[in-house]
Structure formats: C-alpha cells, structure tokens
Image: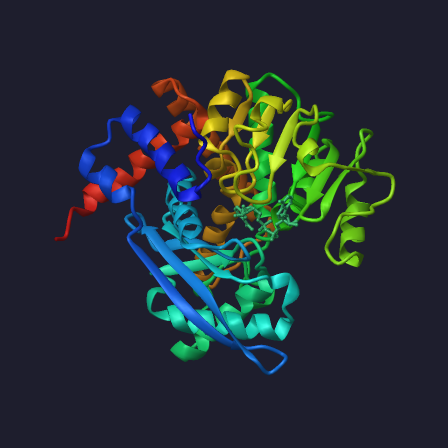
Length: 417
Ligand code: NAD
C-alpha cells in the first residue's frame, strides 16, 4: 500500500474502510466524503513595522447534523485547506464518538505565531473573526484552541464577536480564560482525557498503569498537561520532545521541574538538566509501555511503524498515524487508541464550558473532572463494544460508532432539497 500523507485523504481512507464494514448507504457516504462548507479569507494585518501582510485564513464545517460546528483554530506554517478539511471531519466523528451534541468544524491561519508579537497576533485574530463572523455563533459554530492558539486567542475571539453583536457572548468560543466564562478543568482536559483512556487501554491489556513508562511527543497544551497528569498518576515519563528537540531519562523525567524550566526557556524543553538529548525520530521507537504522539500529523508512518516498541499508542494529536502505519501496528499487536477517541477530552470539557455559559451557572472542578471521566470511559467502552461486534481495529470501530450516530441524526432530520 502506498502511504497517504494528505490528512484529508487519510480521513477519507478510514471513512471508506468503516463505511464498507458498516454497509453505509451510498448517498450518505458521498455526503460525508466532502465538507459541507469551506470558507477562505484574506486577512490584511498591519505588522509592528508599519507594513501590511496579507494572511490566508480558513474555516470549514464538515457536518452539522448533530449540532453546531465545533472545532479549534490552528495558527501554523503548515496550515492548508486539506488539513483544515481533515481536522473538521475528525471533529464530526470525535463529537459523535464521545457523544456531545456538536457537528464538526475547524479553522486555521497560515502564519508563524512564534515570530509574531502579541499585538500582531491580536490584530490577526480580530480580523479573522470579523471575516468569518457570518458562519460563527453559539448555535452555528463554536471555535476552540488548537496548535499555536491559547486562552488569550480565545479571549480576543470572544471580545471581537461580542463587540459586533453588541452584547457579551460567552458561548461563542470555548477554552477561554476563567475570567470570561472559561470552564475549570478545560486547560488540562485533553491531557486528562489521554490519562483516562490510557488507564482503560492498559486495563484492557491486563496491565497496571502505575509504574508503567511513557514517551510523549509534543510539549504544548496537550503534551505537557498529559505529562503532568500521567506523572501524578505514577507513570514514569522517560522521554519527551518538542519542535526543537527531544530529551530522555530512563529513570524518569522530573516533570514538575521540566514545566518550570520550559516557562523560563522560551517554551522549549531543550537543555533540561538530568536528561540526555536524543534524536526526536529515535525517541518514537524507544521501548515503552505507552507512546503519546501529541504534536502534529503523520508522525507514525510506513517508514517507522515497524520499529515502534510501545505496547499502547494513545493519539493525543489529530492524525499522527498514517493508514499504512495502521496496518503495520495492527500486525505488531500494538493497541492504538485512535485520535477521535483519545483526544476527545478537550471537546468534552468545551461542551461543558458551552453548557455553563448558556446556563450562567458554573461547576466546581471536581464536577467537571468526574463528568469528563464518565464521558470518556463510556466512549472507550462503546468503541470496544463496536470493535467486538464488527471484528475490526479500534480506529475503524470508532469511525463506525460515529457513522452510526451521525447517520441516525441525518435520517431523523430528513433531507431538505
Ligand atoms: P500546541 O501548539 O500547544 O503544542 C504543539 C506542540 O508540538 C509544541 O510543543 C511543539 O513544539 C510541538 N511540535 C510541533 N512540531 C513538532 C515535531 N515535528 N516534533 C515534535 N514536536 C513538535 O498544540 P496543542 O494544542 O498541544 O495540540 C497538539 C495536537 O493535539 C494537535 O494535533 C491538536 O490538533 C491536538 N489536539 C489539541 C486539543 C487541545 O485542546 N488543544 C484537543 C484535541 C486535539
């Protein structure tokens, strides 16, 4: 099989496999193979130098049968329409797998946020939101953070949208700061979800989580919070990486100290004491119980899949594994908890945030975490049951579960032509 590295084609490939097993009707298959709406905008922004740059922004809705589009906004140098289309479709399936009442959306701007000032990023964000306003709204499309964006970005989004509609609209975006109606537990929600499904996966393999080892690729919002919570749960983190490099300590990295170091080291893990630098690619193939890719797409491919020595892969990132790698990992009996299940803790607590904004009543952190655990354990069990019913791997089972739920909503709504 030739490997597929275009993320949208990789999504379509898995959708086709799932549709064949599920015997999805052809009409709906055609609908799911394309996004419902793709918007491309040009964003003139005055840079600090006084010159103008024109950035390209995207917002895609894949399917909104089950509710408003939901999905993050990515600021990165690799952003392109096919990537955003893939990420939007994965949101459709993810929201259905974890059973929150949203459809799938995603957005992005082709830019390098690491080289831009706070002022430039604020102007870019406000211009982007005002350009895509017509398709946003608490009942239409609710963005959230993704690679290169954070609670501050979400605050600018909430403010820009609110200024246009002439009232404070908290439910327009999730992942906001607590001062603007953010939810307790949202910042670490994706990382916490990873820990929850890692525990379920280890249990499924009759292994104990406490005392196991983990390797984590990516040390941003998802990777660093997963590392912190896994470490607190008694897992030994033996290696981590970010875009700048990778570090290893077989005895276990001191994660609280690393988190402090990263804050004072311009966000980078490189140079942290008591660790040896290692090749980031080699890091992925270290012997470990759990491997968490939590960075970007296409990290486990036909080139390195056969060298992976983890027992369980928990996909913190979206699309870290290619279709050709899926087959190799399955042959090696490596249990893969797929992205549309493994990283759904983020959208689950985003849903809780949206509910709290609409209720105007805010929950305690313990309540958020308990409900998150319930949703994720239930989703894990539902995927396992689907896997057993259809005799397939967890990824295709998760797609089948999602297809079943989205198909039901499509049928119940009927076609408006
Ligand atoms: P982030 O921008 O906070 O962090 C990304 C991290 O990946 C950084 O540490 C960066 O240095 C690192 N990185 C980038 N390229 C790399 C490479 N080639 N090798 C190693 N590390 C690399 O982004 P994030 O929010 O943590 O998102 C990470 C992944 O998780 C993405 O795939 C995103 O779509 C997915 N995700 C995020 C959320 C969320 O709530 N933020 C929810 C679900 C899924």
